[in-house]
Image (cartoon, rainbow, N blue to C red; front, side, top):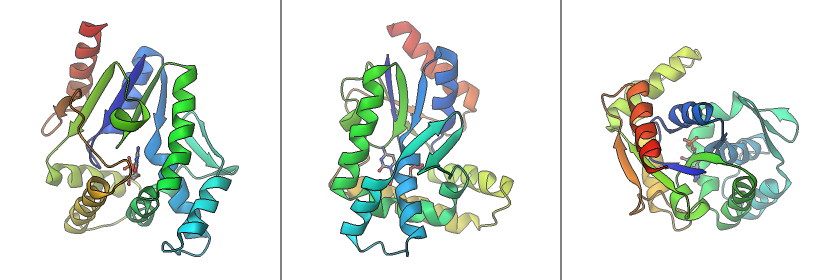
Length: 215
Ligand code: C5P
């Protein structure tokens, strides 16, 4: 069983994917966390996002591992540190590099080759799992997505204005949509789910209903 979930930032993809994974007893792979790990490494190593060669090397050396809810990169627990606004901002800088994508996509395909999986990201239905039986495109109004992100940051004690969160989300979506390699796209065979005004449980139920009908 392969389930692909794509969509813009803050549409609820990871929360929903985790719940679906638990319900069906399958693996959940957070592909965004992998790109975030590379941006985090670049920030640790001098913050130069214009040095493509160096970024590719850092990506080649990155050993990313998931353990339950935790993410490790080269043995370091980066679960929290890859979620800062700074990492979010710079992740699209590494995600537009062809070689970085090829490297991570190959790892993602390998994981999906061995077992049933649900993955969320931007290019899952188009590039990583084009043959997936179930493809969903989660979307939501940008203001609502910004409000959700603000709540997450508030819960972590990170203070940020709603307007600047919204602006960053829009910037990130633009970058993700307009890059050449693995852009954010809504593939033709994806079911579009608008999560605006819907609870997590409602969205989850709608997706499971669809999967169970097709199965
Ligand atoms: O999903 P998340 O918001 O954590 O993703 C962070 C960033 O990683 C995205 O804005 C995008 O630039 C990149 N990404 C990607 N392809 C994926 C998943 C994430 O380019 N499959």
